[in-house]
Length: 283
Image (cartoon, rainbow, N blue to C red; front, side, top):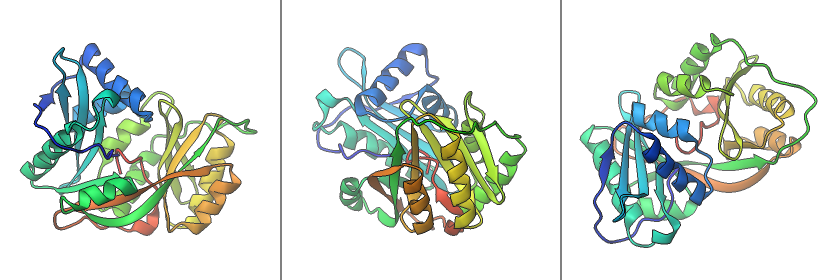
């Protein structure tokens, strides 16, 4: 997930090491100020498996952030480009984003991100190309007639294998982190698998991987029926059957994203298997 606040001056970007309580609180504050869904566990994942960058103000408070998360042997996800509202328009976002891009290039990887339509115009200036489009669907808390039980962790290996086929990149450690959190559920229906995890403002469904769209729609219906908490799910726009199921389950479209890439070769997988992404911060 990458915001569009990328303009002008020069600022010092630091690489964050292990996250202490104070640093984590400052990063969480950026999420809250931006109305995003990430939690402290997401920051922990970026810190453990990737690289976090930050800009501080004169008092030492973190006022901008960015993350690079390597995936597979060739890809890296850029996300969490956040800027404190009072300091937007001063080039902080651009500075952090460019540092993230330098880090991806240093690692010799292809840069990937999910951008808003406004962000697409900006990232095109850096050479990013659009791959496909997706939409965030959301639902408020709702009464449910069933309760979903946490399923056997053995399904995680199957999910990870299908996910690697779908994405063209293996990210088993990322999926294990998402599925292993307190409150996370790994759900399966026939040939469909999904992770449901708690976010700051809603439960996120994703990734949702299935061998066909009908299986994905059935799994989505089960999850929606068994989840009373608010829901968020990010679905490729080419999934007409899934969109109909989302509407039937009471979810409504909120905003669009576009998946973009910079570098060669762009990872390509069996995108027909991918019915909901893990979130714009993870792809």
